Length: 408
Image 1 (cartoon, rainbow, N blue to C red):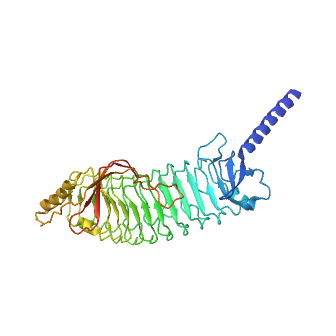
Image 2 (cartoon, rainbow, N blue to C red; image 1 turned 90 degrees about the vertical axis):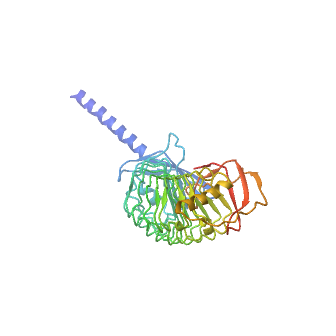
Image 3 (cartoon, rainbow, N blue to C red; image 1 turned 60 degrees about the horizontal axis):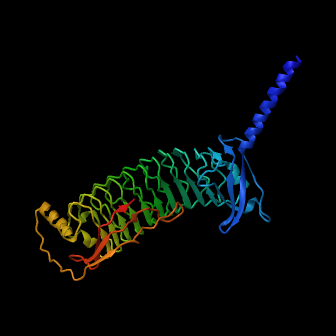
C-alpha cells in the first residue's frame, strides 16, 4: 500500500511540474523602454495557443512609468529563441495596456485574427511574417480607429468580403506577399479615408471594375508583381486625387476602352514588364499632370501617333526593350506600324534634333518604404545611357528614351 501511495505521490508531483512548466510558458515578458516614439514594450517569451488560455505579461517598468504609459508593443523582426508564440492575439494585451496605439507583432506565429477586442485606441497594426491563412469577417472589428494596417509574407488565401468593413478610419493598407488571388467586390467600400493601398506581390489575376469606386481620397495604388492580364474600362474611375499607380510586373496584354479614365491628378504610371502589344489613345483620357511613364520591357509593336498627346507635361518615358522601339527612330516606326495596321497615312513633320545629350543615370530611383509608409515599391532603375530629345508632334517637353532595365 505504501509503495502504491509513493507512486501516486510521484505521479502527482510530475503532473504538478508539467502544469507549472505550462503556465510558465504562457507568460510573456515586456522589456520596457522609453524611446523618442513613446514608452514601449518589446514582448518576449510566452505562448497563447487557444482562445481562453491563461496568459499574462510580466516585466518591470522604468521609474515613473506604468501600464497606462505604454503606447507601443512590438516583437523582433528576426525571431530570437525567446520569440513569443501567439496563435491568437491575446486580449490581455489591450486590457493590460489600455492606451496602446501601435501593435507590431512580427514573426509572432499569429495564425488567426479571431478574438481581437478592446482595442479602441489602437491606430496601427503591423502583422508581417505570420502564418495566418484567412482575413475573416470583421477582422479587427473592435479596433475602429485604426489608421494603418499592414499584413504580409503570410499564406493568406481567404479574403472575406467584409473583412475590413469596420475600419472606416483606415488611411494606409498594406497587404503584400500573400496567396490572395481575388479581392472580393465591395471589400474596400467602407474605407473612405484610405490614401495608400499596397497590394504588391500577391496572386491577383483581375481587378473588379468597381473595386476602387468609393476610395475618392486614394493617392497611391501599388498592384505590381501580380498576375493581372487586363485592365477593365474605367477601373480607376473616381480616383481624382490618385498620383502614383504601379501596374508593372504583371501579365497585362490588353486594355479595355478608357481603361485609364478621369485620372487628371496622376503623375507616375508604371506599366513596365508586362505583355502590352499596342497602345491606343482610346485607352486613356488626358492626364495633364503625368510626368513619368514606364512602358519598357513589353511586346509593343504599334503605337497610335496621338497617344502621347494625352500627356502634355510628360518629362520621362521609358520605352526600351520593345518590338518596335529601342531607339528614337524605332519610336517613329511604332507610329508607322499603327498606321499600316489601320490602313491610313498620316502626314508628319520630322523635327530636327537640335540637342542630344548623353548622360549616365545612376540616381533615378523610385522610393522604397516599409508597411508604415505612404507608398511602397521597390522599382529601382540601374545604370544606363539616357538620351534627351525634343519629341514629335504636339508634345512640348522632352521625352527621355532610356536603355535601362527596371527591376521589380
